[in-house]
Image (tube, rainbow, N blue to C red; front, side, top):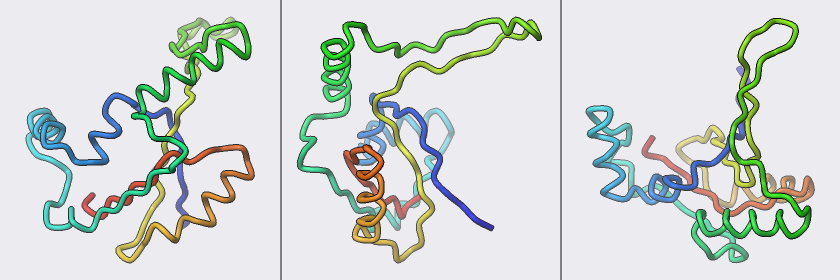
Length: 140
């Protein structure tokens, strides 16, 4: 069986708290689901790398990107999802809004290290995609 990464829009409001395993975030997850999905015994194995080019928190970075889009295109970034009716079928559909920051969750093994992602980061850079951070979660 082959696996891969599915990239999706990043929830900039909670992504960093999730990656740091903030106690308030963990308590909120436990309240919502009755328990957390983290293995506390493996939390010390988590590793984080952050690009030196991106020092701001994700919400601030997103706001900067919105300003940059406005300056370059003269239009605001279309972040909201749009609901529309398909003319042929009459069904309601949803078109996703723009998402300047995306995240992906690759499958990892217990012995996966940050250095293992160097080739992947270079490949993404060749495609014009900048990597802001890598967080290896061995506790999920």
